[in-house]
Image (cartoon, rainbow, N blue to C red; front, side):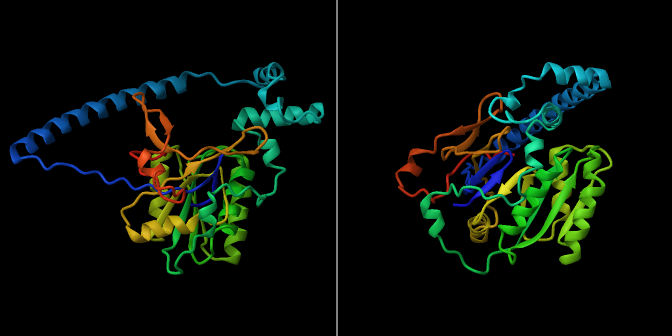
Length: 317
């Protein structure tokens, strides 16, 4: 239905609505269910607290790398996967810079810095989605980007494509949540960009910075608290939007404000930034709680309508 590129993913938006039918228990059974449920919840919270303590202790025990060890690591990764399909024409110094950025970001930051902030990307929506029409009175949306030590060019591409490929009357604001980045590039340079953007459209971009790292969920809550539009869209700050991404989402929410909409992702390759199309899929989890992409149910296929939403039990966060 829509076209969003999420880094490292590009995608059209398919809408998901999960309506869960539950049986109402008898009062006595209901009380027992609530007591048991509270007990299980407390056990889970205790396990999570212990896990968090272990992780924090492990982080504190990891030794800091010195300059020599970083240089040795760079030399040992001279045959890095980054250069398998890309960078054959780079000289030694450029390869060193590209490799250093790759080690830092986990994707080709060197290439990202050299790509247009509004580069053209293929429209991978089903054909029927391109011919859809939408009412003019859709609700406005606040787009929230969460990041920590992301490449500046990737963040700016997220912002620029959101601004240029979302109808201006629908996009109320963009909110950036910096979860305590220590990358100097994200301090003065990003602040300057926000100031310039707001000089043309006052208060259009809001920048929220955390004094300490709060994690993904609390960062999303920070962005949500700063938002003023009736609809909030949460994204990592490594996405690219395509035309027509917003309207179908906002229409579904206009029909029912309790709906939660989730995209079906394609892939942006980490080394070449090329777009790799993924098949339509639903989302779910396995027993280890890893996100899994599943074949849409038979009821969806029998509709013979690729613009129809896919019902699912979970949403990728």
